[in-house]
Amino acid sequence: MKYPFHIERTETSRLGSVDFKNLAFGKLYSDHMFVAESKKGRWTDCRIIPYGNVPFSPASSALHYGQIIFEGMKAYRDPEGKPILFRPEQNHKRFNISAERMAMSQIPLELWLDALNELVYMDQEWIPENPGCSLYIRPFMFATDRFIGIRPTEFFKFIIITSPTGNYYTKPVKVIASDHFVRAFPGGVGFAKAAGNYGATMLPLKEAQLKGFDQVLWTDGNEHKYAQEIGTMNVFFIIDGIAITPDLDGTILDGVTRDSVMQLLKSYKLKVEERKISMEEVQTAYEKGLLEDTFGTGTAASVAPISHIGYRGKVMELPPVEKRIYCNRLKADLEAIKRGQMPDLFNWIVKVKSKLILEEV
Ligand code: COI
Image: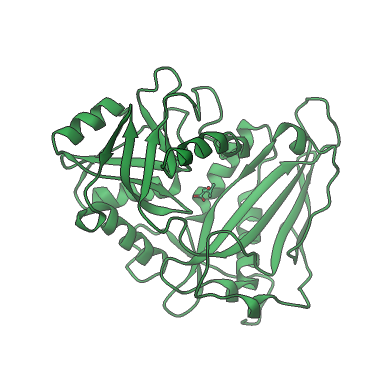
């Protein structure tokens, strides 16, 4: 291995205390985590250690200026019970795009894959098997320079934690189109998985929830006219037999699930358009009975049907989820592919292998 790993196994596994039949999203963390340090562009001190608190200076620039990026991925077991990952190189590519925008260290692909493989291999018993469940993987990086002036930083920590997890949404999602707050502007960081993109959505989310909705449907900052994303997900509208999703104009996250869903929709012979879509277009389609489906896509949420869209004081109610074709078919196919239960026609599945732990767990 180009980046040598130090491994310290936990002496007290928490596995036995987990209720795998009742998993919520993101509440439990598995026994181990991966940690590495970047010092002036060089990655060192790669280690897999027991999950726990991480020491860093209170002067770390991440804490003061939000120089933090992250990814979301999932591990599953294939029908033989072996651990598998879904498109891990896509997340690596996006992590480095986020890192570049936030002036942070690039992660070499070899380090990314070695860290994921060794960690997931070691904690493979933590991968849940029930439908809708998976081992959510959260790689993240933050700046640890002990300097509270502003300057491009040189010291970073890269950590991966994993979490046995259930469905992100347990019911169809009610969204309200934003006519005040903005998630992302061209030239900003909307395309990056920067922590601040999410921190800034908490107040709008709180306000949406007070109005009886679950999430915000983000619109552009100039006119609040065009749809951007929903909560933490990309958005798709199916209008009169055509799937439409906002194009990657710099404000939209280049979702791995978004891309996978587009490929699946094309394989179903549906026309897919990546373009600006105005809320007026959505409303007109709704009024004419042509808005067949709306759903969000993301790693955590997979494919999340939208039940209601609030827009300018009115609420559009979408067809009952059980009557919709696409969100259901996409969700079922994606889940089956990710579990190795369907032929992997797109070469998305990667078997988890260990270079270090030679004995089978
Ligand atoms: C994901 O889908 O993995 C995300 O990043 C959403 C997360 C913020 C919960």
